[in-house]
Image 1 (cartoon, helix red, strand yellow):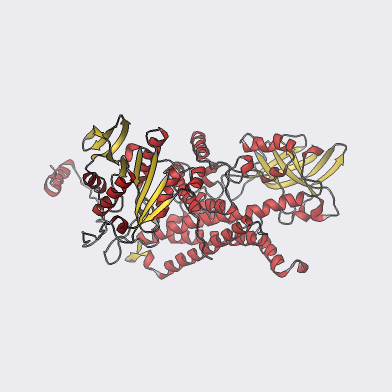
Image 2 (cartoon, each protein chain N blue to C red; image 1 turned 180 degrees about the vertical axis):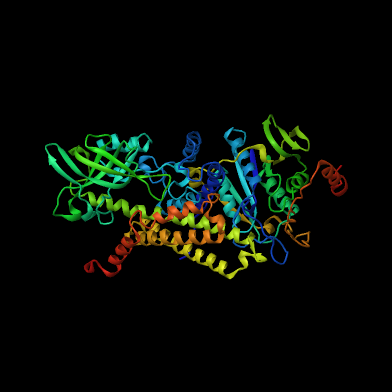
Length: 249
Length: 388
C-alpha cells in the first residue's frame, strides 16, 4: 500500500511571529522555518505503518519555494522513501494545493493520503477535506488513532465534546491531530541515508494547475494585548461585575 | 567566508535543537539554577533515547562504537548542545556521552581492555593530571613530578592541581618527568589506578564553577608498572599536546553556543522591555550592543568552523584552533556581559541563566590554555619559532 504524505514548510513553532510594519503579512525575514508540526505527526504515522508492514512506500510531497526541499529531506530522514518538490515562489492557497495533490495522488496510485489537519502558519484546516472531495474519496479528519484492516481504516476522531470512531473504505484521505503520536527524532543512520533518497522536482504548470490566489489579504494585525485585571473588594462586587460588565451571568 | 551547511548537517542541527528544546530545557526548568546534573532516571531515559538515535558517544571514533561524524559536524553540534543554563560545562547534561580520555585510543591492546573499553561503556571514570602548582601553560618546564625507574616499576613523586574528578575516578593519567635534561622531550604519561598506595587527593579546590570542583593531588612513592606507560617513555608531551589542540575547537564552540543563546534572549527582551515610553530595541545604545554581540558571535563561529574544516581535511590546524579558542572565549564573555546589561537587574538574578554563564564563561579564558598562550601559539606560527 502506497502512502502519500504532504509536508509544508512553515515558520518554526518556537518563533514569536511579528507582523510586518505595513500590515501585509507576517515578517519572515531571517526567521527560522521548519516542518509544520502536524505534518511531522503524519510522517510518523506513515513510518509506523511501514514498520508494521501496512505501508510499502512513503512518498513525501511539498509545494513551495526551493528551500522546501529541506523540509522533504527532513521527512526522508524520519523514514520517507522518496520526495516530490512542486516548486513555486507564489503563495499557494489550500484549493490549489488540493488540486495539485489530487493529480499526484492519482499518478502515484497512493491508497492513503495522510495530512496534518492544518498548518500552523495560516491555520486553514481545508486542504485534506478539499483533496478528499476532489478525489471523490472518503475522509477521516482530526485522527487521534488509526487502524488499517481489510481494506478499511478505523479512525478515532477528536471532535467537539469527545471522541468519535468511524470506519472508512480505502482509498481514503486522513488528517491527523496532535495526540495521534509523538514524532521520532531522526536517527543518525537515517539522516545519512536520506541523502541518497531521490527528490523529483516539478512545477505547478507540470500538473496544469492554476495557482493564482483567489483570496486577498486586507490586513494582518497582532493579537490584542491582554489588559490588566481588576481587584474586587467583595463577592457582591464580583457578581455585580460579572452580571453588568462582563454579561456572563 | 560564508559557511553553508550540508543537508545532513542541517538536519542534525535541527534534530539536536528540537531535542534540546523538548527534552533538556523542560527538565532544566525544574532544577536548581546551580544544578550539575539531571535526576538519574531522567538521565538514563535520555541516554537510551540518544543511543536509539545513533548519536551516543560523541568524540569516540566509529571503530570504537562512536557515531561517524566529522569535526565540523561535531562543532556545529557543540554550538547547539551548550545553549542552556548548564551548557558550558555540562552540555545537554552529558546525555550524548563522550570520549573521556581520548589519549586511550592510542593505548596498547591490553591497556584498551583494562581502561578504554570500560570507560566507553560508562563503567569507569577518569581524570587528566597535567597541571602542577608550578604552572599549567608550559608543561615542558612546569612538570616537576618525577618518575624514576625501579625494576619493572616506576616510582612517582610530586603534585598536581586543578584536576577535575580525581576524587571520584577509577583511574587517570599522570604526566611526570622521566628525563630532567630534555624539557618537553622528557615527559612520560602514566596510567594510574585509583586508589593506589601513595596517591592522595589532598583537597578539593572550589572555583567560580559552583557545580564542579577541582582537586589537588599529592603523589608520594607511587609505584606504577612499566606496562602502564601510555605511549612511549619521554613522549608524553605529544600525547598531552595533541589533546590540548583538539580540545580547543569544541571548547570554543561551547562558548559560541552560549553566546548565541544569550544574544537570542537579549534580542527578544529588548523588543518587549519598555523604558521612558519606548522599547529598549529602539535605543541606539542597545542596538549597538546587539550589533557588537552579533559581530563577536559570527567572528568566533567562523573561526571555529574554519579550524574544524582544516582538521577534517587532515591539514595542520594548531593555529586555527588557537584562534578559535582565543576569540570564542573572549567574545563569549563579552556577549554574555552585554546581554546581562540589557536585562538589567533581571540579568543578575538566578531566574535567568546569565549569572551562571557569566561566572563560568570567565573560566574559559583560562581553562584549556589561557588567552596569552593561544596568542603565543599564533605568534609562533605567523612570526616564526626563531623569535621565541
